[in-house]
Amino acid sequence: EVQLVESGGVVVQPGGSLRLSCAASGFTFDDYTMHWVRQAPGKGLEWVSLISWDGGSTYYADSVKGRFTISRDNSKNSLYLQMNSLRTEDTALYYCAKDGGNSGVYWYFDLWGRGTLVTVSS
Amino acid sequence: EIVLTQSPGTLSLSPGERATLSCRASQSVSSSYLAWYQQKPGQAPRLLIYGASSRATGIPDRFSGSGSGTDFTLTISRLEPEDFAVYYCQQYGSSGTFGQGTKVEIK
Image (cartoon, each protein chain N blue to C red):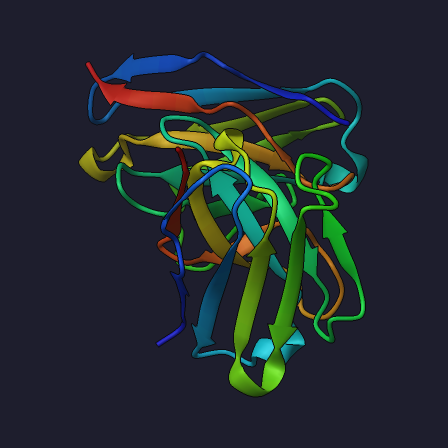
């Protein structure tokens, strides 16, 4: 089955750190750019970060640049998001998403996970 | 950054009716790099349309997308009960920004 499964979301204090994981299955993981997209409670969607198929290129939204780091392990079909210096405004459901294009970066998303909830609160 | 504005905020319609959702960009979206997503409560978004008018795999043909430049439209020809949801547009010609969403609710 083609799917993405996120994990790692918890309640963390402001200033804290967290690492999210996303396990991919059912497709050739290392053929695709992968993304993280988040959704604050009751709000819309916000793209967070992307990583190219080989990990050689990464991009970040201005809101997380310098605090979050995206990475991947193609041998484990896994995507990660290291989140440091967390702020209350980082509270959201974090989705792992597969890029819609085959090789390259197309920046739309044709497969989503169910998300993992990160709550930043004291 | 390209800002997308969706209208209306809420659309109240009955099953069987036609739904027309608008997405307007603050500047031209290159190569019609515009996508539409459907999100139901408690679920992840689902890709409906990419390239402004191409349906994603498995999407029924009652969903259609059109437009270019700064004005785009998602049309649902006849609403089915499962179509009541929130719809987001996203431009991906210059990074990837989303509109704020249109809720299609049962009248």
